Structure formats: structure tokens, C-alpha cells
Length: 567
Image 1 (tube, rainbow, N blue to C red):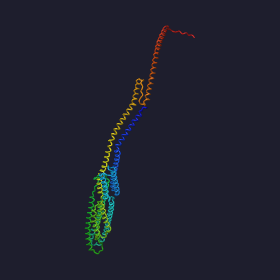
Image 2 (cartoon, rainbow, N blue to C red; image 1 turned 60 degrees about the vertical axis):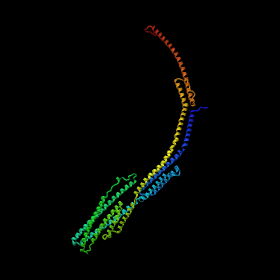
Image 3 (cartoon, helix red, strand yellow; image 1 turned 45 degrees about the vertical axis):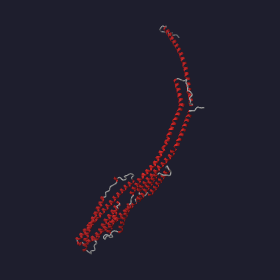
Image 4 (cartoon, rainbow, N blue to C red; image 1 turned 180 degrees about the horizontal axis):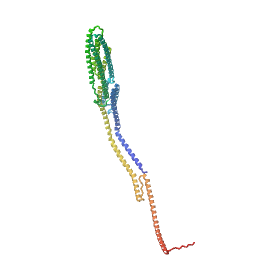
């Protein structure tokens, strides 16, 4: 039977660990399946509810933005609001269906959730109804355009009346000058009376010229006053437009609201009116004086065939009154249009217009102005009154205030519904956390098993790997100290057998080399001893030889040596 290898032992240990882990995981899954599977389904369900709730809030916000955008663009968005309500109702129905499907009792809905949904639907419908009743009728701004058209028409017609009166006044002046010239020729013989009449008439003409100039100045001042009022209205409309676009309160900063003081212009107009009235009164007195003088002179020159200067002067008085009154009506018409003052316009229609008509239809003014032109101008004032009445029903500001109030009450309902759905989500999370009661013991068991498995592997490694390695290391240390005779015993693990045999072979070879080295060293020692003995003998021999040579040399007598020169 073969020995079990280290590799097989480790594989067996890992297999045992895997089997235990699978067994523990299976047991854990069996007990935790309700929390894992059903809990995951409930969490997914609540997540879907949260997403649907966010979509519902987005639809409500888009609906509010749609209302403000429609007001800014002057566009009726009633049909779009109805479509938005349908989407909101569909989203509410989806939430109720999801709550009913995912509740503890399938098919039933929490009464509190049902109440929140019903409140949301009612308030969203109320917002649409407020828009339909208060904003939609005037949102397109058509009434403003109609009023602008009627105002321009009225001002144009009354300006035509004023121009017609001015033209008639010029004709009357020319006729009066002709009459005076004729009268002057007829009554030259009357001298002083005629000169006095002429002076009065010239004074009347000069004053009439001044009166015409003052009337022109009054028209200029009135037009300037109308233009400044128009600029003020445009500025206030721009502030209202910016306020509608504002996302934070206050929508309009009080410091940004311009202040206007038209008292100076109004005082100037009133002053011009008073000046005209005084001039007309003075002119009337002069005219009455002239008429009296002419009547007196007429009696004297009765039958002379001169122009009826008295009638011309009476017509001039009527023309001056009519021109002044027409200027007043035109100016106040513009003011009533700018300030939306229905009372002022009504006063013109009921008081000043009948007075002007009576003047023009009097004996002195009969036939001067075409009655149909006057009727057209009067009709334009009636149309202006109707347009002002229509604009008076503009309730956009009131509608926006009520919509904001309803919207303010709607936001807490959305928050309460979201909190209610989130509460169910939190409860599911709390239930899901109970899985810790199973996971923690399972983790502890797996940790203990892992520790035991680690100890088992460490034991195998210690017995099968570390012990043989330690034994071989110890044997090598002995060899390092000079012990080459001991050998490694057969290791229990087959993986180290070849290594042990190799180490033993190395030790045997080392021991053989060492033995051979010792033998060579011993032989070298013997050879050295023998060579050393012979060397000493040779040394003594050389010493003796040197001494003999020295003695031999001493026997010879010193002197020159003769060398025979023989060939």
C-alpha cells in the first residue's frame, strides 16, 4: 500500500472544507430563505413605489411650471393641464395598485394611503379649475390688444374733431376779418365808433391767436403726459413679468419699484385749462362788447348790406368752447385708458360729451361739425368703456395666489405619502436585518472550521514538510562541524526521499574525499620527513666540503702566478 502524499492530504483537507462550507451554506439558506427571497421582493416593491412617488411629484411640478409658462407666453394651456391631470391620476392609480399588490393582505390598500391619494387628486383638480375660471379667460392678452385698438381709434377720432374745429375756427377768423374790413368801409363816417369796434375786434383776433397757441401747448403737454404714463405702465408690466418668472419670494423687491410723480404734469394741464378758460371768458367779454357796439352801429347803418359780424363772433365763441372741451375729452380719454379709470371715462361719456354735443348743436354751432363724425367719436368712447369692463374681470393675479395656496397645501400631502411609503420600506429593511441571527452563527461556525482546517494543514505541513527539512538542516549543520558519518533517516513523505538520498550521497562523497585527503596528507608528511633528513645530511656534507676547500686554499703561497706562454 502506497503512502499518502502531502499533495493528496492537502486536497483531502480542501475537499472536506468545501463540503462543510456547502453544508453550512445550505443550512443557512434553508433557514434564511424567507428573509432573503421575500425580503428582496419587498425591497424591490418599495423601491418601485418610491420611484413612482418621485414621478408623481415631477408631474405635479411640471403642471405648475406649465401654468406659469402659459401666462408668460400668453397661451391658454387648459387642454395641457387636463392631460397632466390624466397622467397624475394614472400615476396615483399605479401607486394604489402597487400598494394593494405588495401589502400584507393582497388586494387591500391602507386607508391612510388611500386618503393621501384622494387628497392629491382633489387638490390637483382644484388647481386646474382655478386656472380655468380665473386665468384662462384673460391669459392670451387679447383684451389688452382690443383696448389698445379702441383707445387709438378714440384718440384718432377726437383728434379729427379737434382739427375740424380748428379748421372751422380759421375759416371763421378769415370771414370775420372780411366782415370787419367791409364794416370799416361802410362806417368810416362814423369814425370813432368804427375805430373802437376795430380795436376791440383786433384785440379779439389777437386773443384768439393766443388762445390757439395755448390750445396747441395744451395738446403738447397732454401728449407728453400720455407718453410718460405709457412708459410707466410698460415699466410696471416688466416688473410684473419678472415677478412671474421669480422662483423665490419676495418676487418683487420694493426698492426696484420705481416711483412716479405726475403731479407737475397734471398741474401744468390744469393751469393750461384755467388759462384757456380765463382767455375764453375775456374773449367772451370783448365779443359781447363788440356785439353791443355793432348792434348800436347796425341800427345806424341798417340796410347797408355788410356781413353779420355778430353771427361770426357768436360762432367763434362756440368754436373756442367746443375746441377746449374736445381737448379736455381727448386728454382725459388717454388718462382713463392708461390708469384703467372707468369712473373718469364714464364721467366723460355722461357729462362732458353731452355738453360738447349741445354746444355744437346750438344755434351758433349748427352745421359746423358733421354730426356723424361726432357720433363716431362718442361711439369709440362707448367701446372703450366695454373693453375696460372686460379687462376689469382679469383675475390672473388672484388666480395665481389661490393656485399657490392650493399648491402650498398640496406639498405636505406629498411629503406625508412619501413618508408613509418610506415607513413600509424601513419596516421591510428591519425585518431583513433579522437574517443576522443566522448569518453571524454561520460565519462563526465557518471561522471555527477554517481555523481547525488551518491547524490541520499546519499539522500536516509541520509533520510532512517542516520536520524532514529540519532533520536535513540539522544533519547539514553536523556536517558543517565535521561529522560526516551520520545519515538522514528515511522521511515519512515520499516527496523528500530523493532529497534525503541526495544529501546522504553528498555526505558519503564528502566523507570519501575527506578520507582521501587524510591519506594524501599522511603520505605527504612521511615524504616531508624523509626529504628533511636527506636535506640535513646534504647540508652537513656541504659544510665539510667548504671547510676542506678553505683549508686547501690556505696552503698556497700568495704571489704572482707565472703563466707560460707556450703554444
